Amino acid sequence: MPGGIDCHVHLCQDLKTGPLGLGGECADNFETGSRSAVCGGTTTMITFATQTRAEEDCSLLKVVEAYNARAEVTGSYIDYAFHVIIVRDDKDVLEAELPILVERWGITSCKLFMTYETMRLQDYQLLDVMLAALKNEITTMIHAENGDMIEWLTGEFPKKLESKAMMAPYYHALSRPPSVEGEAANRAIVLAELIENPILFVHVGSSASANVIRAAQTRGLPVFAETCPQYLNLTWEDLKRFHSPTCFENSKMVCSPPPGPDSSDQAALYIGLHNGTFTIFSSDHCPFKYDDPHGKMAGILEHEPSIQGEPCEGMTLPELAHKKVGSFRLIPNGIPGVETRLPLLFTRGVSTGRISPQKFVELTATNPAKLYGLYPRKGAILPGSDADLVIWHPEGGLPPFKLTNEHLHHNVDYTPYEGMEFDNWPRYTIARGRVVWGNGVLLGKPRDGQYLKRGPSQLGKGVAHFKKDPRRVASWVHEL
Ligand code: DUC
Ligand code: ZN
Ligand code: ZN
Image (cartoon, rainbow, N blue to C red; front, side, top):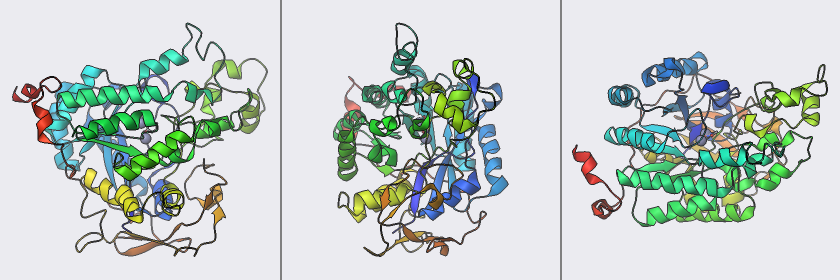
């Protein structure tokens, strides 16, 4: 198969605590993250250069330059490119810098948030940035969750989760029921349609969201979607697994949006993979260590009521985690998965017959390359393409085994998929013609990877007729 392309990976991302960030420290840098990727059959990744609301992050070009310097410190085992996360709508910056991002860096995609106080854009700001992106043929990626609903369900008054002391990790899911995602996805579609902007929903986790996306696609809109392994393999039950008022272990599963309540969402998402609702399948590898004050444990250590009260001095972090629930609000959001992405979908999707091998390639390599302007150099086995390949064991050639974190090559001290059974794993990963992973041995080097400048998306822009409906589309905006 063509080597995997994972277009949703967080590495060396400055997540900053406090008023400017999401909290937590990314456990993987370009070396460790790409090492993990290559051992799981991935040969290209796209990571995020992140603007913050700090004054020095006003310039997107400076954000990208600083981020690139982080990549160059270690180098990468595999080829890589950047998206940019935009958290403000400074008109002068958008106008002056987006064309340079495209021209100089080949960055042709940006991610926008509809939640998180420190990152979210209001509807009018989403429109501003989408329009600027559209003019520059930059694909808009949307994190669709209704931030107000989350805050309302979480906050103090009148008697929501926090004031009822429902703050253990499991309640993260209750603060984000699937309608939170469905509402935001619908709103983003309406906004994008207004100005005829193609959009891509990242990390879709619920049938509520998949359904509105499917309906928009059926109307001919250029709406694309991504789902991720956690939404096919975890549910609220996993967040409840160790649930007790004094257990923090479930923080290992905390990500946003959370996986669905039960396996019915998983079944709906598999149908979406099969019928084309989902264009791509990415990991959303967002690595935080568990036993680390800047990792998941920040959910306890930054929660003052947890570290006051009975004395905690002298306790190790794991001991603390057995005594305290912390607050889900302060748990860094995200889970690792760059190495397990392909083997999980192969084992649970291809081996079981839920999706065909052809669909697997489309979702994990060809469509990602086309969506993000890398095709046919990447995502294909063709004359002239880079010889990036992944070769699997023949059916039955690898005895089924239970995964443990020791199998993996990331810099994280756990995997959410601990104990799951796998019946295949990439036997060889070949990057630009060289075997870099073979029979369980890492053969590549951290500076093998090259930075990739990308072109505009090569996927369709939708059908023409919807443009003419003035009830939904303000075509005249483009004439101003
Ligand atoms: N969004 C992501 O894409 N990754 C982790 C956390 C988040 O909110
Ligand atoms: Zn997100
Ligand atoms: Zn992400």
